[in-house]
Amino acid sequence: MRVCLDRVSQGYGSTQVIDGLTLDLRPEVIGLLGPNGAGKTTLLRTMATIMPPRAGSLSLDDRVVTGERAARAVRSSIGYLPQKFGFDPGMRVLDFVRYAAWMRGVPAGRWDGEARRALEHVDLWDRAGARMKRLSGGMRQRAGIAWAIVGAPGLILLDEPTVGLDPRQRLQFRKIISGLRDSVVVLSTHLIDDIEAICDRVVVMHGGAIKFNGSTGELARLSRPGLPGNSDLERAYMSLLPEEEQVL
Ligand SMILES: Nc1ncnc2c1ncn2[C@@H]1O[C@H](COP(=O)(O)OP(=O)(O)OP(=O)(O)O)[C@@H](O)[C@H]1O
Image 1 (tube, rainbow, N blue to C red):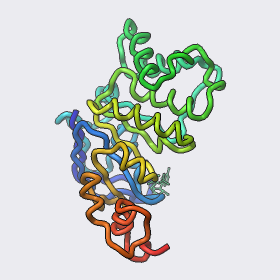
Image 2: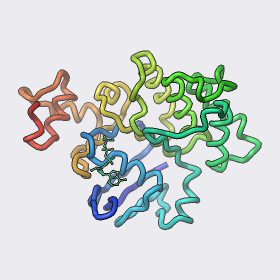
Image 3: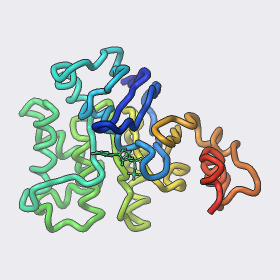
Image 4: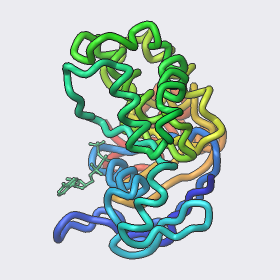
């Protein structure tokens, strides 16, 4: 899978959030980093084809996604987990993931096998028969990841997937993500240590624009002494913010 955004603009009503953003992504784990309101969710929703670009284009594997019909055709290749995802609390975990398989256009004969594979990947197969409302927060988050990865979509979009996870669950999450490198995996996060631990590439956004796009090593090299932060990556991130935001 190759995902290209070419001079994409996006917004809500009269608010322009993203203005002429260009990005070219290949299979690897990409961390999307930026302050509140930078436009990370808006970018993820654009890639998920939920919001058609106002200007510019989104293409998946060289197919430009124009209009609802084209969007429907590519949605089977996209797994999107919003920051707050809804579910029927009485639904069993297996049915929740099977439902995602159905939505993604997986043929009926493969729903069970694909759902099982996704639940095994997130280490939740032993809870397949439990009702969603009985899961702990971390388990629920893993069920959400199973929802996003069932059917092996080529593009996996996770919006702040580690929020609310305890340290062990975050380590589990890192292990789960490491096994997904055949897809383009984009995850938004505020946690720089998650980026350092699991991402091959970092994209830093601010004010709807991309301020940095490169490896974690390349980002670390932007670190400057004197900037706030406890690691090179934190100081490098601070160096990308406007000067007035570089002080605490
Ligand atoms: N439904 C909406 N209607 C109007 N404005 C919106 C809507 N959703 C987001 N915005 C605005 O768009 C801008 C970007 O928001 P977005 O949620 O994409 O940022 P973000 O980087 O994901 O932030 P966060 O880290 O807080 O989740 C913000 O100024 C926000 O107020």
